[in-house]
Amino acid sequence: MRILITGGRGQLATDLVPALADHAVTALGRDQLDIANPDQVEAAFRELRPDVIVNTAAFHKVDLCETEPESSFTVNAAVPQRLARAARDTGALLVHFSTDYVFDGHQHIPYRETDPVNPISVYGASKAAGEMAIRATTDRHLIIRTSGLYGHAGATTAHGNFPTTMLRLAAAGGPISVVDDQVLTPSATLDVARATAGLLDTQATGTFHVTNSGECSWYQFAAELFRLAGVDADVRPVSQGERPVPARRPAYSVLAHEGIMRLGLPDIRPWQEALGDYVRGLQGRVTT
Image 1 (cartoon, rainbow, N blue to C red):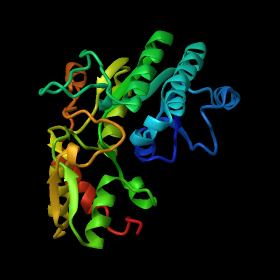
Image 2 (cartoon, helix red, strand yellow):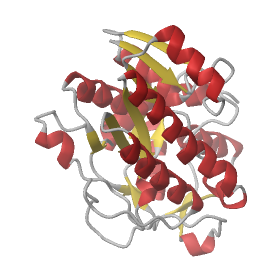
Image 3 (cartoon, rainbow, N blue to C red):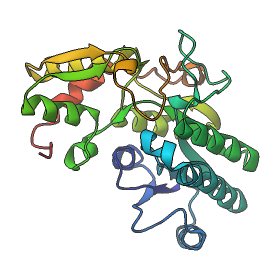
Image 4 (cartoon, rainbow, N blue to C red):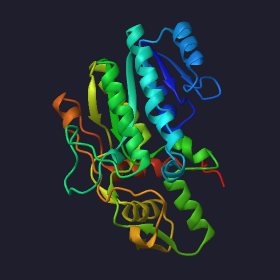
């Protein structure tokens, strides 16, 4: 298959390229393909004639979305609909990544793919709108909800990701406060990429949840990170109320894997195992 990946410089896209190595993959960064530009999208489809377009691009700065809702809905809803229309018109499959933040976090058991969405932030609402726009535009879609992504590509950027941010804070010294009442499943982009490749191999369509297995709070994730890295950090649990931010986060947003299990695909390894491999691979990668 000919596969076009948008947002090709990001953490997830970086791991998708080798995961899809059996196919002809083209990964384009924003400087090469601005998916908000209809002319560029049309030119890319015309030149590359993709059988599959994998959209990893998103406006995912959750707090900034609260003050920039128009940009959030443009990138996370209007642009995916435009991609869905282009995919429909050319017979391509659209693979689109969504988020656990489409749920409100009020339940205490993992959310299934069929559970109703009820976002509590602009970011979550824009991603839910993107899902609905895609479903309304083309039947040939694969929507993958995931959670708390981190990958080695993020370790080489100034912005970093949660694990590298925690390690930098630990190196700087002093106490580190991390919320302990937001429970989810932080997920390695390597595992999400491999599971995505498995879904493509089965020619799956519809909505699927793809995360590592298990659940933890951000505080528990940070504590395990420091243990695995052999770092003696003064990490302290706090509540979301003690750390007010512009955007509300779901208190519980663990995602059940009913979809991939129904297809007979292997379940994804536990988050602790994925984090251990990630820490072992960090040496020499972290940007200070």
